[in-house]
Length: 288
Image (tube, rainbow, N blue to C red; front, side):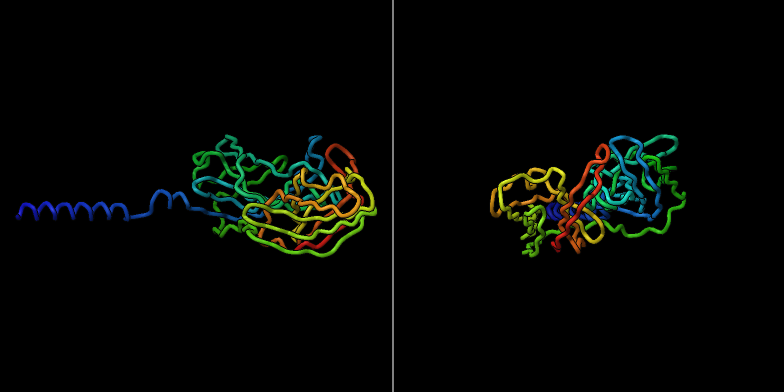
């Protein structure tokens, strides 16, 4: 009897020790979820010299940090050449110098707005390395190169802050009013719908006769923070029948929750050099 009691007691003790080992301290998943962020807020002018990048930017390094053991940088870029449009992306992958070795941050964590250029638009993004061990946590790079811009970080990091990462719009269903007449056609956005599965703007175009849309016309969304958002090419107006035409413009980028003052921009542009257009006319219609 005493022998059986001893066996039961030993089993219970073993179970208690096992449970204690499982609950004593953070798990690997909890450790990998750690993050840190250090502000910099240094701005440099970036001037492109390549034919397929015909525009200039003010690029601000907002800060740096580590997320899940991976080093990352947060940038925002602003177009500075005035009333122009370019489809060329302003998202750049910086090179980080560490002990004489260059590491390219070619993975991207998130972005705010579209990468295209439109009339001093702003674009914000976070980029990171492919492997966590490339820049160990706490190791501050010697230099950060972004095209011709060179950012040098202080070896002693500033006080840590909470990263202002974007929170995206999850649900919106709004009926819209207002219209504009261009070339004898009436353009009227009638509904904005955002769900977990789709982002679309319904646009009606009333035309007196059959015809095609101008190939020099651009459709964009722009918010009060000068971020722009684009539509898929396949959803844009192309051919009109006489009467009322309805189009569901599919929004490419996610919309941040703080995107107030959202407007539909309809602009006519003309080519001035490779991938660079001047804005010759612009109409805006309130959406949010």
